[in-house]
Length: 187
Image 1: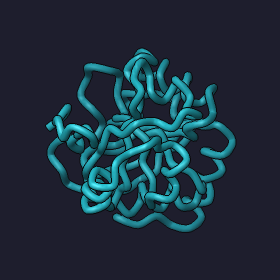
Image 2: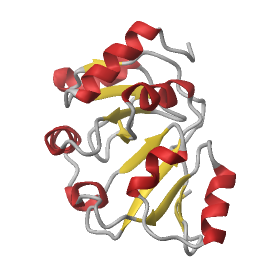
Image 3: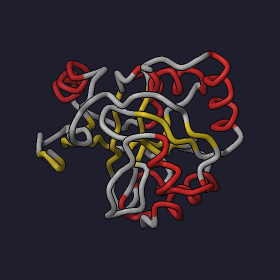
Image 4: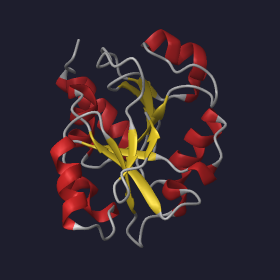
């Protein structure tokens, strides 16, 4: 199932808006997500993953315009290179806007962002009207979940809603590249 029923989509958007945590299919694995500007939701997500805030998080969106408030200054050639890869399974480290909270950037001045082409992940961002935090559904350093049952086994009842669907079929999480230098952080 690569699409989501409208009722389930509205339910997921409501959970996101109210500060809940959702699990949903992405390009390679199931992701954990929440509203990026809801500190309580992000802290719950980090606690569930046992992930330090200093590492930073990835934001996904259905279109680049949703990410604009989070993006700082970037050269036109760098932005053109990014836009050529989107929508798609390419995550970029970009300078964060001054207003981006440190619970998203961690110890860095950059933010990891992606315009996803996964139909369910994109539909969730569209329905909620916001980018989503997107990190693998697992405890840090453990294998990521690839289906709803694995999400439940790895995350227990700490996830408020699991959105069912197929992942995009990638064998590994999306590559992460620095938009300014082209350095690959995750292949």
